[in-house]
Length: 477
Image 1 (cartoon, rainbow, N blue to C red):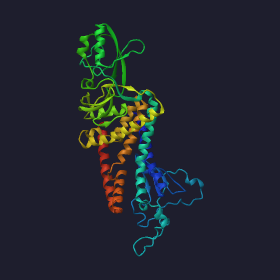
Image 2: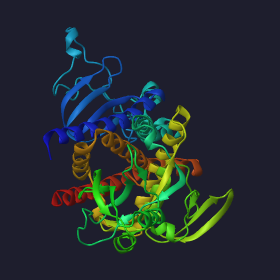
Image 3: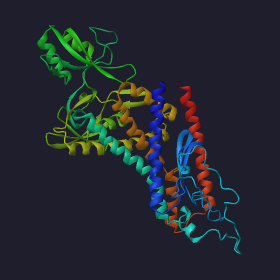
Image 4: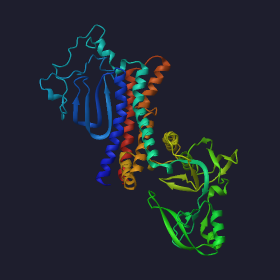
């Protein structure tokens, strides 16, 4: 991988983590919680700055693998034990001393610590009412829920905003409807003949400047009957070996005739099993679809086996049972493959952009949950899971093709980060939300010690999984 692409990946990860932690930080400040540190990265500090106004330490740490917001009373211990952290700025006569420092944040000395006098009930009177008021553990459960929810929400919101930019930049060609405009016709021969290669889709006949789009096998067959072997120029759509790019190749002087078409070309599987040109697809196995992107995703996700399609045909709604699509295998899993053409939206106004932004983003959220379900049901193997190293490799590959595709990949990663953090697993934001939900139902908080143990165990499991995935990514480089 090129060093520049690795740096690009680090920048992307850093930006997404920053946005996530910024959500926690802003909501904590809004709820009146004292923030001790806002950190990007993990491990030792390499850069840090302490705010004279709030006492918050802003730091950049060595390992670009995460980040955190440390809040007063986050583990319920600082206030309970009467330990008052150093939240005030150190005295200084040098006005420049609060500028950016390198490894300059030191632990408070014994003289700087507040003296503790134990009271009769075992609590410290150093825990002042003002300090208690700004501790995370003393906030209402609803404020703690908002603080935990803010980080994932920022990632999901960022994903939606970037999706809007992606759809807008992609232009009118990216906003397809769910109405069938035609079907793929493709070359089925096992050896090269007349310039065709296995996997080629017939795209258009070269006639005039624009050509005539090939929309069905019947259209090709009819053309062959008319041509009677006469040389015909045909454009084919060809995918690269790595599957990352598509090109259009002109094959000249193809002697198109009835026998040739019957022997080396095949029509769409979905057309043969019930789908027709003009159908407007409404549902795939009961899942509602509004745009071509949603339709293509559901075909990919569910179309590896026959599906039921709800369509509107000639003004009437009907269900087509057992519609079949061609399949392909990737990372040990089988997927359905779109073998039809669709009509584009009639206009490319702001409402159309907003519509496709919303439904494409929602489809991406669904994709995250579908992927998790596929892992638990053994549809997807461990080879389909990637960590930072695997994602960096993907970013590198995509960046060589198109920066617009990198933008879409950032959308997917951002939404993925937000949704994954909402999973009710200890150590994740969703784990905290689950504990707080229990607190709402029970109308009393869980014991802080038990909550700490649960989150610690979850964090250990997450770190172990991250280590295994990283090893897997390294071995497959």
